[in-house]
Structure formats: structure tokens, C-alpha cells
Length: 203
Image (cartoon, rainbow, N blue to C red; front, side):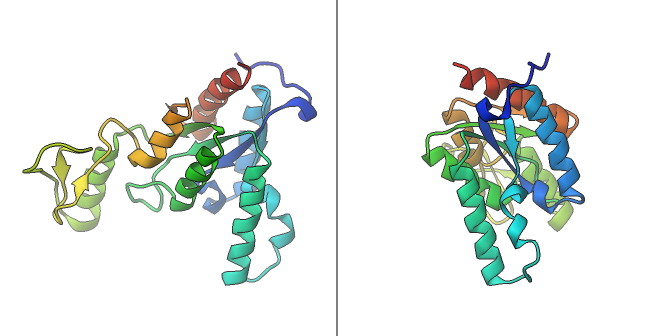
């Protein structure tokens, strides 16, 4: 059951990262996710919260760098991060910007949790993508060892077996003491991650 929300001034600030900023109606989605966080005593912070003064700028290099700077400053102000690991643009991998944010907050030794609605293993995602995009399958590697037993048609290792995403991204979450939580919908998956994070932060 969700815990009773604490006052905002005492709630840990949690950065809500993922490809969510690129999805339709992101403000509404983040409002829902923030409510889930509040139910677990956390203050959810969306990347859009730091970009209010940038909304009227035209697309381009300077605007992008301003957004990156705002996101970095927002991460600096947060106590922890919860990351959406859903595949991005119909590919196997997650949003690369979110992967960078995982590394950035991991380097700050902050508590991290992950969540997704796609609980397939990373190799299964790669297999599906190769079949859909190129009509190609995977094959067993001739050389054993390492992070994967399969390779694609180009001979690239299909790595990170036992994980839902690239081992560096999911691995940093797990090395921080977190896990990747899977459910049917984003709010349900986030609720699992928020509950786990709140328990960790409470000691």
C-alpha cells in the first residue's frame, strides 16, 4: 500500500528520467507519475520542470545545449533517480540520453531505480529488432565467454544476458543497490520502483 505523502519540504527529490519527454502529452504523463511518487513520500521532478524558461526557443544547437544544462542542474538538485528503460523508437535500446543520465547520477553515488513495461531480455529485444528491421536472425558465437552467447549478422555480440537493457545502463542501477521493476503500465511499474526507492532512502 502507498505510504502517506510527507510535506514537500521533507520529501526526497527524485529525478524522473526516460524517453517520456518525447512522448505525446508529456506534461499529463509526468503529472500522473509525480502523483505516484507523492503517494510514496517522494517528490518527483520531471526534466520539463527545469525547461520552463526554454519553451519558446527555436530548435537548434543553442537550445539543445540549454536543455542539457537545465537537465544537468536538475539532476544535481535531486537526491535520487528513477529511470524508464523502455525501448526507444522501436529499437532494442533505451533512449541514449537517459543512459547518459544514469551514468551521471551513478557517478554522484545517488540511489537509482529502473522500471519498464517491456520485461523481455535485452537479447530477445535485439532478436526482434533484427528480424523486423533487417529480416535477419541471430546465431551462436563461435567464441565463448563475455557478456553474451549470441551475435548478429554483422558478428556483433548480443550482450547483457539476464538483463532487460544494455548492461552498463541496467548495471549502474543495480550497482547503486536498485533493481528494474516491470509492470503492464508505466504508472504501475513506477509505483514499484518508487516503493523500493522510498524504502532504501528511509534506511
